[in-house]
Image (tube, rainbow, N blue to C red):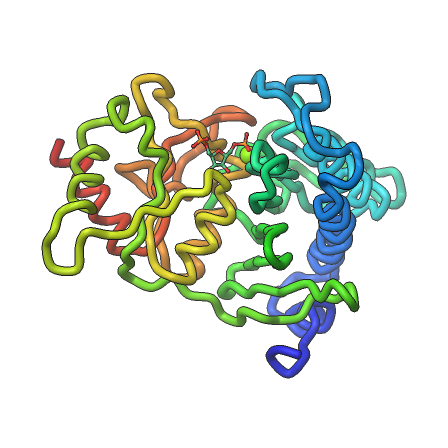
Length: 334
Ligand code: AHM
Ligand code: MG
């Protein structure tokens, strides 16, 4: 077993003391996510064997067709969190409005809100490419004892207390941070246990991979076009390698291990880009920074942006620190 066989459960207990005001609530919350992720993993693995792939026949708030597994993952995470009564509210890519949850004493006494994309990259399910769950956790800003309100969800990313992602891929891995570095845990399919397999993950400061949907090239702002040309130039350590799965967590995970930059910028067709600030960009940006990487909208730090809407979109450039800086240089020059 990897890394002295330390399990995620043991790791969570070991780290609980790192939080000055911890009463175990955040630990129980992460516990609940890891359990729900096991259920989703089981279902994702069965795709193709049972009638679970394909569209569910409904569209979500953003007008996108919901896949059956999207709906399943959404319900699984929400039910797991509601049953354990450990958050006061949940916002999901798949729900128009946030959900209010009462605590154990039916008194809105829980402290944390959770925002998530329950199954990101779900258009990849039918073709057997890795998909993922992304989550972001904040302490509520409204008083304990009252129902949550929109302001509990519209907090800048720099106030996140924890964030993570799960990749359902060649192996299933849960990566998360509570603001003290980033650790990854691989799920043993035989034992159903997550083991610490990627301790203290770090983004290389430089990299040789750029990840972008180049089909949108003609619609990109000039700064992004110029950066792509820079990546392709025959100079020094270039041309870089192009790798793009169209599954955010997988593209970010690979780039964090190998060194690279992911870009979903604005375009003439999508002026705000595609990715959602609250439950896609902010959690990934928090993880990237905790691992020594960076995340920007092309001009400024993602984590400093004050959100205005639950399903707000934002251009997203994330990866190795020096590569993100280079993209920003190209953006400001053009
Ligand atoms: P989704 O939340 O609808 O699955 O969309 C998000 C996904 C990301 O995982 C991925 O990086 C991006 O959309 C790919 O978009 P495109 O197909 O336009 O390149
Ligand atoms: Mg998504």
